[in-house]
Length: 289
Length: 104
Image (cartoon, rainbow over all chains, first blue to last red; front, side, top):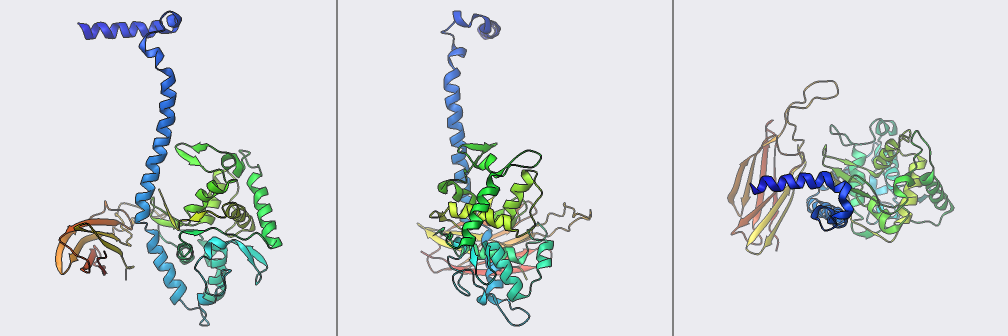
């Protein structure tokens, strides 16, 4: 009796509500509209908070450590064909100095007359001292579930040696300034079938893709968020991915042709992003879904 | 030979918190490679944990466990300085044993 009656009235009210809105201001369903939008905003920040919690739990036991161990072993024990080792590799702070080197790259290296980012420098050293062939590395520059290339493990270890340090990429040498400016330019360069640029998604505050908040890479406190997670352990698949991979994937998502591995343009973009993030703290290799 | 495990063992109140990160492919045997051939199953089958010379956990694991898995245990009655020995064996007979000491 009563339940059925009330559903009937409810249906009647719903059908009538559009027409008689003005006459029935006190009715319940209508007065609910404004708080609903507020609740949506709260939901969003609640979701972000849940993500943060999720990340914290994962970071405690990040399998990236396994790759760090592998990289350390290669760095310390592997010998090249003529007996050379990575102890001769200069990451910018002197031969063999790894502590803190990661957060101070990209930088200009006088021996090659070029600005190199961490990944590029590590690969350069592995080719120069350990006898790796650049062509082989280029054949599979990024990890897949069948194989994580050695250089990826070494990069992960090098990055881990800058854990909890402040980012301090230099911008003094003319080539470093040039790389920064080129990076800034590429960041804003719109092209491709979607007429996209990096700045389309990462040039303003408050943008997002689905529930994922996107950092505005023009600001230090947000640029760190893009810098932070890399190299990162991707749980889907269970392997390490590097910052160069991330950059290539951004190009892919924009429907651009993907840059060749270790290209100057990616180094320039990384220079722009890292210098922008200067002064922020790097937490070390990350973990991604 | 498999890569070493990463073991963390720390006293939290009167219980020891042990966490171990293992390096293993954990192939289910259900996936195919790019040529369409089945990738053979390869997974950790048995795990044992000894604390202070006493077996505290003996477990069986299967293909539902992720690649490079993390396990966590809480053990009562352990104390600082106790040796933790963790061992796994996979379905191909490959095995690995690693040790750690419980810290304060």
